[in-house]
Image: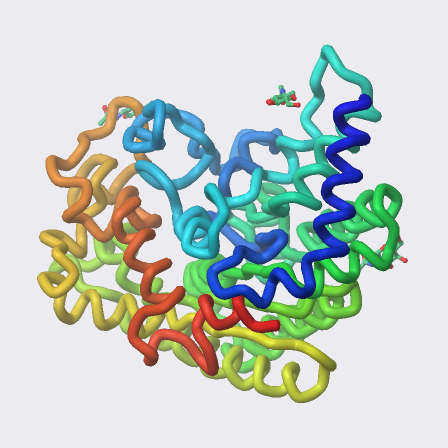
Length: 372
Ligand SMILES: *[C@@H]1O[C@H](CO)[C@@H](O)[C@H](O)[C@H]1NC(C)=O
Ligand SMILES: *[C@@H]1O[C@H](CO)[C@@H](O)[C@H](O)[C@H]1NC(C)=O
Ligand SMILES: *[C@@H]1O[C@H](CO)[C@@H](O)[C@H](O)[C@H]1NC(C)=O
Ligand SMILES: *[C@@H]1O[C@H](CO)[C@@H](O)[C@H](O)[C@H]1NC(C)=O
């Protein structure tokens, strides 16, 4: 207990002195909070019950992670959230929210709150959940939907305020990074529906919910948003394998591109409306399109097949302990039939942090992290 109190005191004093120090180039933001789907999930889904919940809790997930064990990341090693966090000066992604609430038989509920508050004040927290979409209806019951991730952040914030007061929390949150990457699952679910409804109506509800999410985060004190758009979802192995020639599904890619156009406009509008809001929008779509057009430029040997799976393109089944593993994991864009491999995550984070200007707008993630 005394150690925790001392730690909290140190945290408070570092928050209070953060303003002049934060201006120094290269200093990391005080914390990062992550909302989104399986591209960013670092283990929340391992804590969800339910037979259909996707969990990366078995080999060969984590085969290239330090220790070689599955961690809940849908990757052979680190994922994009980790590499973005690392590039900003953190050790890795902040820990999964549900791990900080996890029942710890040897400790009291008071310690759980401390565990959450300490993480939230010193590094941040990840609410990202595989299968999550922008809409609550997307994969309902199999994930933590975006609206619930937002409620979990609100609950975290309330614990932070109780521990160190609202002035310190506002100061910390205004300098922290809010990393958001979500939308792919809404595209998959829409495209898989037997009766195609109106795409315009889909965009309207997606953008309205995205707008509400950012507006509410802003009202809770968030100012710096790092947003990742939806990539070429029509080119993931599980979609390619549906085509006899293994080609991308153009319709699904168009669905993503049109959503991304609406998301870009939304952020322009929100930045004009919400005081102090700054953002960097990362163009996952353009990065994946350019990567698929010239794989060798980034050192890829295979852009179509998964590295862990079974059947054609190793995309006819999930990555399981009895799966086939490809020989050159770094040469594959895709690790399993939906998700990028560790090296692709690294290259993605590098592109968004301080890579070619066309992959971020209006500033890159480095400029966002270092903005005052
Ligand atoms: C219990 O808490 C410790 C740190 O306080 C953590 O490392 C450990 O993972 C927790 N146990 C479970 C089962 O979550
Ligand atoms: C956040 O929590 C406060 C109470 O602590 C509540 O009044 C507010 O409605 C909550 N906001 C959201 C979006 O959950
Ligand atoms: C998301 O959209 C649905 C349907 O359009 C709506 O019922 C729900 O209230 C929205 N959620 C938020 C947080 O705006
Ligand atoms: C792998 O194991 C699963 C059950 O866990 C089984 O359904 C599947 O057919 C097996 N796949 C192969 C390629 O043997």
